[in-house]
Amino acid sequence: MAESILLDTRRAAKADRAGIERRQRARLADMVAFARQHSPYYRELYRDLPDRIEDPCGLPVTDKKTLMERFDDWCTDRAVTLEAVEAVVDDPARIGERFLGKYTLYTTSGTTGRRGIFLADDRTMAVVTAMMLRWIGGWLSPGDILRIIARRGRTAMVMATGGHFASAVAAARLKKRQGKRLEVLSAHMPMTELVDRLNRFQPAMLAPYASIAAMLANEQEAGRLAIHPVLLALSAEGLPQAEYGRIARAFDAKVGNSYAASECVFMSAMCGEGWLHVNADWVVFEPVDANHQPVAPGEPSHTVLISNLANRVQPILRYDLGDSVVQRPDPCPCGNPLPAIRVQGRSADVLTFRTPRGEVRIAPLALSQPIEAVRGITLFQIAQTAPETLELRLQVASTANEDAVWREAETGLRKVLAAHGLEQVALERGGDPPEQGHGGKFREVIPLAD
Image 1 (cartoon, helix red, strand yellow):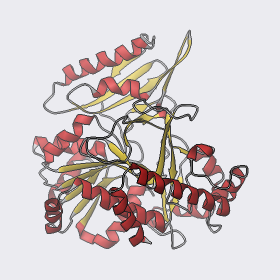
Image 2 (cartoon, rainbow, N blue to C red):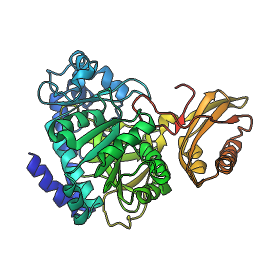
Image 3 (cartoon, rainbow, N blue to C red):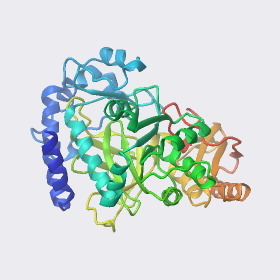
Image 4 (cartoon, one colour):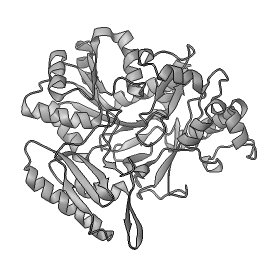
C-alpha cells in the first residue's frame, strides 16, 4: 500500500489540475461509501443522500464537538471506544504507542474548546510519508540532500512535549528509529537552555514551530546561537511574510513551512513564492462564509471545510476546521497547479465588544493586518484582557527601535478600532512577550472568553 501511494503521489505532482480533480472526486466517493458502510454516525447522517457522492457540497457539515460527542459511533472500527482511547491519552508514558497495535493516536491541545482525540490508520501514515517526501523534494536541491546525508541526518525538533500532540507522537516514533541522531526539545524550554542544547547538537535539519523559529533567528543574529542547518521545516503557526526570508538569511538555510491540523496532518506545504499549496489529491479544501457557502478566490473565508481522503478509521468529511484563509485567485508563479492559500487566523478568535449600539465583532484578520505591515515585528499577540481592553504583546527584532515599532503598531490598531466605532477601547502595551499556549503554540488573537 505504501509503495502504491508513494508512486501515485509522484505522478500527481506532475499532473495538471484536471488530473488532481479526478483523483479527488474518486477518493471522496470512495471515502463517503466506506463511512456509510462502517460508521453508524455517518450511516445515520447520510441516509437520505444519493448512493454516490463526488461533490462535497452535497454533504452536511460536521465539527469537532459533534464528532467527539458521537465518538464510538463515528469510528469505523467497532473495537475503538472513547473510554479506551482516553485511558491512553491520560497516560504520558504511552505517547507514541500504537493503539490496538494498529493506529496512531494523538490529541489537540484544546485551546478553542473540548480536547479532540484523533486516530490515524496506516493508510493515512503512508500518505503523510509520501507528502513529506514531496515537500522536501520541493524545498531542497540534490546538493542540499547530500549535505544532510553527510551530517547523518541529524535533526532537532522543538515542539510541545508532555502530551499526546501530533508532533510529540511523531517525535516518539522517530526517536526509536533515529536514536541519537534526533534531539527532541520542549517549546517551553527557557531560551538560554534551548540555545545551549542546539549549539551542542548542531542539527542538519531543524523542525520548530514557526514562532519558535522567529525567536531562534533572533538568537542566531545576536551570535548566541551558532548552528548551520540545511533546512528549517516550520509548522503550526503563520508568521508575517517577511519573517520567512529573515529566518532563511539568519541561518543561511532553506526554509519550508507547512499548514496542517490534527484532523489532517498532511494538508499543505509552502512554495518558494510564500504560498501554501493544498494537497488536493488527498484533501478536499473548501473556503466558505459563515453560512458554509463558497467564497470567491481572493476573499477571506469565515472558515474552511476539509475532507480527509485518506483516514478510514475516523472519517473526516466536510469538517469545519475554524480557520480563515484566502485562496490565490490566479495561478501561482511557482508553477504548482495545486490550490494556493494563505491562512489568516481562526474564526474562533473573533473579538466581541459590547456597545450602546449592540455587539461589534472584529475578525482576527482585520486586527492582524496592520500589525504585520510594521517592519521590525517578529512575533505579536493581541489579547482581550477586559471587555473594553486590548493588550498588544510584541517581540521586536534586535535591530529595530522598540518604541518606534510600538507607536506604528498602536496607530494601525487604533485605526482599525476607530473604523468599527470602538474608539473607547483601551490599548495597552504588553510588558511581556507573546505567550505560548499549553500546546507550545502562539495564537495571534486571544478573545476574552479564553
